[in-house]
Image (cartoon, rainbow, N blue to C red; front, side, top):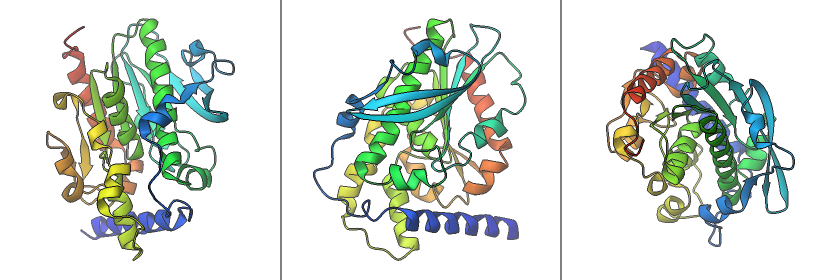
Length: 302
């Protein structure tokens, strides 16, 4: 019980610290923000600097995006199965996770017990520990840009791997990465399963919780914040293929505030947010269970 209390307090301390590090410009939320669709439409992989087939190779790879006139850097890390027909798992990290591939590396530190290619997606604005707050939370547009960049990279990775024979694709992500995975499934479909862990699409609630911890009143009402940052309406995907996991004492995405956002009740583990990103066995077991389910449940059209 004492360890649970300490873990929960660490969550609150980290969320409080993260909220205070957001730029003042983000707090000036107002109308006139672009839509997520507009930001996604103007974002693309820059094929002059990133050959599309470069992501189908083992190791770390730089990926460059273009959004209007802006060049945006990101990365992928690939563990390629010797079997080209092996399924593909696309994994996305949490916001400000440093190094970004920490949880992915811990989950897959040993080879999986079945053929599998895994690709880690690094979000834009995560090259340095200061960058996520300085850039990704500069404005609502910048939040959208961070998600949109990841989605375009995931789209490229899925296309390249399936073109080279991968039988199917499963998505998984922790925290911010869970939101990203749900957004991708809702936007593009074409995946057998999604495993959002320690996460939900309602980023607006996380912002509200952070503000409450520091005693700050946000310069917008709840309805407007939900319109901007609750991505639940954008994450429409076959509920039977969404396998969510929440931590009982997670303060970022607590079951009390986020479980109702899922059509099927999440798996609840007796854990907090930050501790679970390091003690990843429950995450590993969950991902492997989802992959085993996906093997026997092809999409209706394939």
